[in-house]
Structures are given as structure tokens and as C-alpha cells.
Image 1 (cartoon, protein in one colour):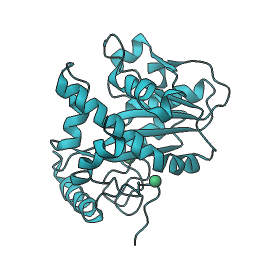
Image 2 (cartoon, rainbow, N blue to C red):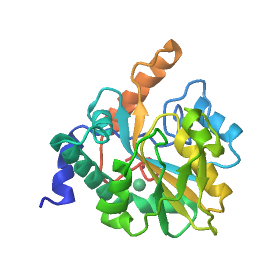
Image 3 (cartoon, rainbow, N blue to C red):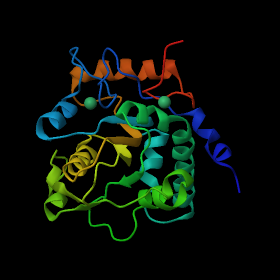
Length: 254
Ligand SMILES: [Zn+2]
Ligand SMILES: [Zn+2]
């Protein structure tokens, strides 16, 4: 049986870091922003439309559209096959290895000592049976499986909501102030997972941290105004380069 380190070595060849908060980077979701704003449009929507949002958000890496990580994050939840299960195992090893170093980063950022509960957001898209992410976090990864609890259920309203910031998309189990780690696979607009964070807080959760494996990134956005910012961001990420020892919360310039 290969170790998590062996399974994940190849990621160092192509993973790119999500940049730390700074000029041109959204302070919430780490994407490129234009016009000197601290937050991107979607994160502003989240803060305006929801009563509460995640206390901290962290990512393993950038999921650049049409590049390898984005492909793997799509493929692992596709039709069961040898290739699909190999990718699912590799992504589990990636998340496990990354959490070993960086769970302390978002624990600190969320202001708690640990996360006794770990959950995932149901897809709500009519999928039956266990979602591959639920399997990854609730069964495969040794450091999360004992803390895993499916705390959220989609409402019928939720299935129709699409990419809308709305806590009513989910019903959460009643909570008593426990800090909660929400694991997601790809962050696109954040509406899915930020709505879940709001539902968890409405149900009584303590600090909520979101960790998403990939931060969706489009190098050539349709809107011309964003193209230069996206390209600058991509280059800065390549310049910084991948390092197992740093994430957007703990990275420091050398
Ligand atoms: Zn943002
Ligand atoms: Zn870190």
C-alpha cells in the first residue's frame, strides 16, 4: 500500500497556490479582484445576503479551468471506474497530507483550539447514495473520519436555488456551539458552502471553517476587465510556486 506522501508526490509538479490576502486578492476567497476592493463581488453578495458566513476559508490549491486539478475534482465524482477510484484515493491522500500541516492555520484563524465536528455539504442535485466527498472525509481520511457527521440536509427549496446565497437551502442538525470544519471539493462562487455555513450558524454552531480542495480559477474570464487581473494573479501564483508547507493563511514572503 503506497503512503500518502508517495500517492501525492506528483501533485508538486502541477499544483499552484491560492494567494494570500493582499492587493488584488479577495480577503475571503483568495481570488483575483479588480479596482482595489478587499473582496470579490461574490463574497460581497455572501456578506450582504447571509446572516452569517464562514469565519475562515482555506484551500489546498488553485483549480485552474482545464488544468489537471480541476480535471481530477470533476472526474473523482463521475461514473465509478478504475480511473475514478484511483483519482478519488489520490485526492483523499492530498487532503489528508495537507490537513496534517494546515489544520492549525485555520483553527487559529477561526479562533478555536480544534474542530470536534467535520461535515460536508450535500450536493442536493438528486444524487442517491454516498457522495464521493462524504466517503473521502467520513471513511477514508484517518484524521477526519472519527469527527465526521452529516449535519446538513438539502431542503426542497435548496435543490432549486442554484448558485444563490440562501441559508434556507439547508437544514442543519441542532448544535450547541461546537466549532465545525466544512470540507468541500471545489469553491466556485462560494454560494453553496457559504449558505451551508449560515445554516450551521443558525442551528447553533460555533466557529465555522471552510476548507475546499480546489479554488476554481478561470485564466481567461469572459469579461475583458478581469482578464489582466486573472493573468497577473496566475503569474504571481506560478512565481510563488507550490510548497507543501504553506497555505494562503500561513504563507510569508521569504
Ligand atoms: Zn471572494
Ligand atoms: Zn497553512
